[in-house]
Image 1: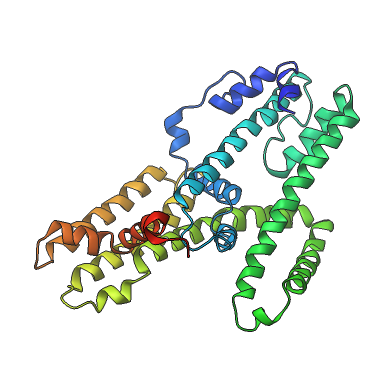
Image 2: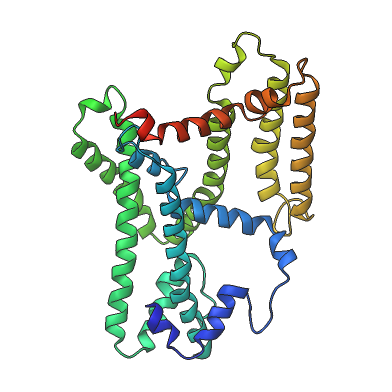
Length: 332
């Protein structure tokens, strides 16, 4: 599909749109684009969904590894492999967009979400030689992309169920069958006249906003809340700097993060540049970090850095590295 797309007339215009954001020969101002909070929210939602993070998919898959399986190399391979595939696939998509503009097609502007897959691409395939072949390739591609996403999501939910005391008593095949049937019932809603609106709501508010907020919460919980109780009760550990930093992270990450992304900017509720939200976010974080160090009675910066500033993240990173060293830990 990439090679065929690049060979189509006017495909270069679509590629310039892809790589430079050029529309009708006009390249947008990068500063304006980068200050658009909605764009960042969409980008986060896309990469979260593409990588399968936040939804529990990678957690379920990783649970099948041996305990001390090195994961750093796997993480890099999965991340770069996924992003590289997405980048390569973009050439197949945007070459078609340039071709449709050359045809002066009425669907040339349908370049986002499901409109691209179900409107623009089929319209382009219809005009190509061997149209049935390319339509079949497109349908097969969409089917494969959909079915592997369905496999992964069912696996993520069934793994959580199986880890419970009552879920372990249910055969995995039966729980997967029940999950698929329930999902099938919900999917019927897409078949009605309001189905596209229903899909757009789910695609926008669950696949973008909700996953973004969940991502913030998961990173925050893993890095700064996991092990917090143990740290607070550790003999000789000062509680005041930990409390100040915790409150700072709650305010900055769980409140200012969503405010910056969704409320500011041209399309947000607050009609100011989202850059100001980012500035306010970092001011809160920096002030909180400085205060947490100043209230410490023992001004040991190394102790503060490991046990206060990055207490959960430092421990988590240490465990990841330590457990990845099979030569030291053994394979058990």
